[in-house]
Image (spheres, rainbow, N blue to C red):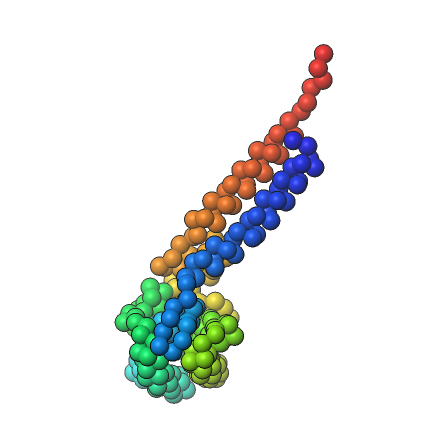
Length: 243
């Protein structure tokens, strides 16, 4: 194979990779679902589930701040967050009930690590972990809610996403007002005890508990690497003149 043919083949393979990868991701989103309040997408449904799981851990740790913290501002923020999630839960259950969407009764594995961490802390250590864990989670949640707000075709979901986004923005401001939020709180959330580089989402998918690398993406990457390596070795093989 000449260098020109090699580059053309590699280009075609990369184009196929670029086109095929988004298609795989879209397929994993799942089909639309019909509800009494109209059609909802997989992302719409996922929003309702994630808001419920956020309430399941943020509400309780906000209440625990009343006994674990000696910082008056942290206690005030925790109390308000807990109260807001009770109100949000009422609206969420009403909406999910009308749509006949079941809601989870437990947090996800990463959220459980945050609960366990905070329940093992008191005083200043609790305050700092509380402010940063919740600020980080709220930052990610704000992005997800905003994306649903922008893309949903269901008016009821749009209204709920709008209200949820307003509450999240309010909570971020309150958490920052404690003066305890560091770069950790401004970064993507990671499980307690994990390093950011390990839990970052990327081409191979999330490495946080409860998920794993995307097998198809790994296979495609390995295939591309094998083809490139084999072809380069062939091109670089010395050619001897024929006697």
